[in-house]
Image (tube, rainbow, N blue to C red; front, side, top):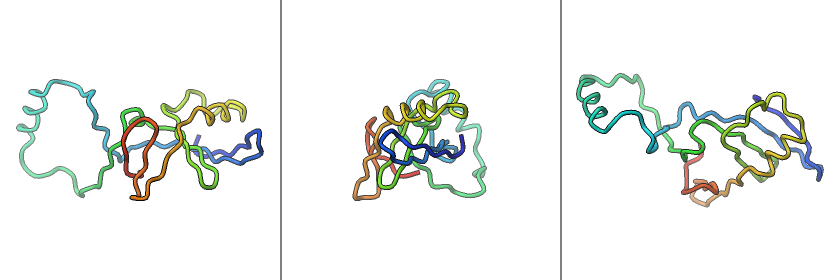
Length: 124
């Protein structure tokens, strides 16, 4: 599902799309290997930085690390993670049910947002 629109039972039109945080830092507590393995790997790398450009990275909550559905009419936004299976073939009724259980995104004056699942995050 790249982008889709549906009308809910109240007649409100919603835009729905998938968000994949490819350029977003996915660092959270569940990592492969031990601390010693990571230290050894860092020491072996050495030398020049391999990245050609420095990217600004934004942290996302672990529940959003592998993507989410974003639901948005004018002035409101909701997130549903993880992305449900079969989203491409889902009918409007199913999409509306997902929208009802999606978490509202609360906007903060500082330009950051807070999902119902945790602390403030920068907008991706």
